[in-house]
Length: 177
Ligand code: SF4
Ligand code: SF4
Image (cartoon, rainbow, N blue to C red):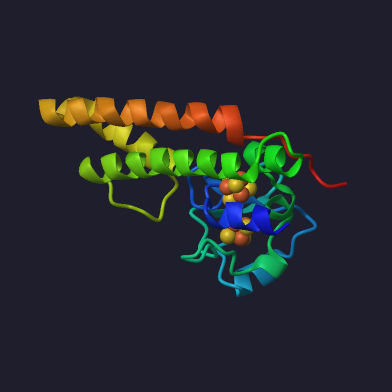
């Protein structure tokens, strides 16, 4: 599936903190090995401890390859976004899929640019978390008119990114037996 690899290498949105904030591990995943490989696996406390690591994933290389590909967790193995699935099943061409990925990347980059311009330069956090923090800061009433206008632009950019993500990218995955 070379075209599928090319598509994902041009995209990376399911690993870079655009579509997801974190990756949850399944009991079948080797959390210790993933930690040894450098992934910051933590265990969230609750009724049942859930091992997870945050996105943007530290295993995502500059060329959008996965550094731990052979050992990647189950969620990463099983996930195929809607665009990828549609192209794989022949419902759209890979060229059309690439155009959608490029469009989504542009929207994601616009959100990142506006976040930076509003003072959030924490590129190591997921977009959803960064937008939430920026919203809290700017809605606390301390923003001047210029920041308020830019925040309106940011809110619209996030909305447009979400629309495309929900329409074309998100799919449901089934937990392993
Ligand atoms: S979001 Fe879809 S096209 Fe993009 S890297 Fe993930 S699976 Fe591939
Ligand atoms: S482990 Fe690999 S496939 Fe999974 S989120 Fe990280 S870079 Fe993506």
